[in-house]
Image (spheres, rainbow, N blue to C red):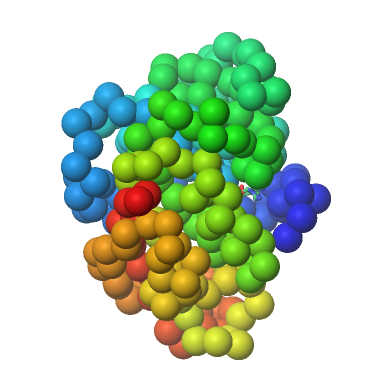
Length: 218
Ligand SMILES: C[S@@+](CC[C@H](N)C(=O)[O-])C[C@H]1O[C@@H](n2cnc3c(N)ncnc32)[C@H](O)[C@@H]1O
């Protein structure tokens, strides 16, 4: 999935991954990361996720990165926020009310950009990427995140071959393979979620599970 694929999806409004409500796993498990509130939270491949508003409400400053300018623009407009613009890490960044969204490629980020980040909220990023890119994505996260950084990771799993991704199916075994070397992994919860996602049943899925993991950078 290259940049053009995602930019076109946003232009065509094909953003079924976007949730109008706050993610239930986030609300149930965020406190498991043991944060005080006030920490800087990184949201990779953030889209226009409303979960960033929830994180800010917990007292965090939020920093997201997203390829699509349309997504970044929509986030601020739809939430009646009026951002100021600056350049940071060589990227255009927009900031309002303690939420800063940079428009650009996640792979552009370097460790020096992440030194103040204490936690990561990562929903539907891994499942957005084909297998080879997932390896690069996990390796890059390990490279840029500071030691001790906590991650709440949410992924999806469905029977192999029932649907063409994205979203791709990622089970606990793959999370272990991708992250096990650089992160301690705690599997927090798995739920059946086909009922709540009729669009996937219509696409032929007979099972759909969502899983939530806590990762701690060693
Ligand atoms: C499946 S969506 C998930 C969005 C968001 N995390 C959410 O929960 O709504 C994946 C998003 O990642 C963005 N994206 C894909 N590759 C990217 C990259 N290399 N750097 C930054 N954003 C990227 C896409 O534009 C898309 O908005």
